[in-house]
Length: 101
Image (cartoon, rainbow, N blue to C red):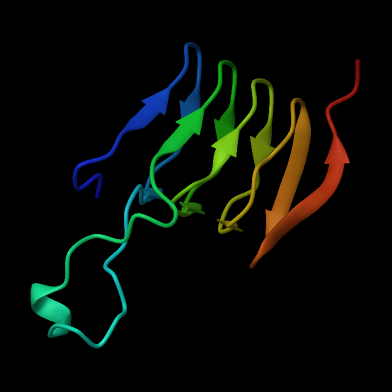
């Protein structure tokens, strides 16, 4: 779901099956019914750098940037920026290691 914003994926990325990349979410205010709510402008877009590996079933949420060389473990839910060559896992995902040189 990009809904008026962008999803950018760099070169040489591996994205496994059943991944979800969400670049926008509905606004949660009570001014309108949920079905009529516009997209939130708080966190939008997703940027994935070059040479990133995203494991099966991972979920990338709005506003996230994943730097080049990062690895996202299968089933992870990424809610924050991921640095270069970092390895993240979990729900919510957190850094568990870095790729060796």
